[in-house]
Length: 596
Image (tube, rainbow, N blue to C red):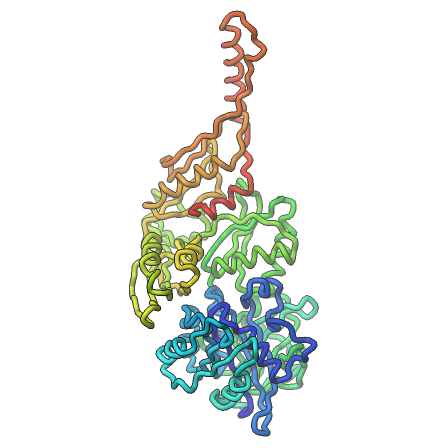
């Protein structure tokens, strides 16, 4: 055990974490020069294109130091705020962390929040100043920020560059020298932490784990504590570039287990593995089910594709256990699914993967968060879909989730960012100057205001210099109403939204105007209305396409023309009663961009 080191990498998006991991793999000869490619650990096309890590990875390296061979387990973590639970489990499996900071951008919000996670688990932090080869690098200023943040000596900060390979040897030495060996009792009952799982179409679900106490052997009967399921360890092994089977894995080490599991729900990140006949006394602390924060409906463009969409979603869930979905139907869109996502980026990625990996073209409805509605008589209803909200006369009050948002930006943008957050019903809780021109702002604001377009607006008003991170705090009482959109008196449930009463009129008006532009004209007049309960608060009218029925009348008595016009009027009235209005797909998309 004393020659094992388990570590992870903490960084904000685009600070060069995957590139530096490539250099570590190269330096330790884990990957041959022929197999090496940019961002070796990011194996999804989407990850490479966007330059973000979506799925965490683990890999084992061997490293020679002063004549002794060490086993280094790198447990990679996703960088985006949506995947913070996955990051916390990866951190729990490590004893140390590399804190990577971009020498040109300095410390960002995500770095700080993941650093606090690492400090909560008592990890040893090795600060690394990356991208030293950039012409815009400011090593001295950023070193000051790191010193203030983690109270370390200036000499402990390792200058490095993922591109040129500068400082990689120093990082490996620091991992061996500074990070402690894992603690654990190899003779105690088996206790292992699942920190990730992947799906293989031939072998079922493969769980990645770290053994804390005891030893696991191939062929052992094991039990997953939280789900209570028992399995046979068909194959266990370590994670190199390819999975390498082993006979046994003992305390302190990281490996994988294949036991023919087909259901994604049976393997939960954070669960504990133990032996069936000699179980551990207590499970590992900190396990929780992943809680979706944003809900949206996903519908096939063609209703005949519903079963294909169900299969695609089930396969996607095997690969991404944090996706939650259940069937629902809508009057306007037919059959589809109500899906729960960790955040807006997660939702975008799922939509993109459905299109790329399964060839499914889908319509996504307006995203919303989960509300708690208290019906008179104190019963609570969880509302994930606007149509689930009880009638206004039955509701006592509605609570919505609030988050604590942490924004780090240059001081010149503070005014504009405060204005944006106040407009989104945010309350400023704290303001700290990290350096003379970098400010950390902490706001408490409703989650519903953030899921829409907050992040895009934040980036545009700060010219890309603001970094944003959030965590949920609690549900609070708010004055919320359900806004319905009606076409010719018929409600379009896919366009309904739960919104704060103060903003309902403005939002309703905008949607009506937008729909007027997008819905094509018909032979009859179409009324577009926005209403709260039975009260209409906004209206637009699409005029009918009018055919000139009097063109064939040349002269003669006015009553002949009047007769033709009256006949047309009666026809239009009848048409309006039976005619249905087709809503183009662009209308559903436009609602998402209503405030642009």
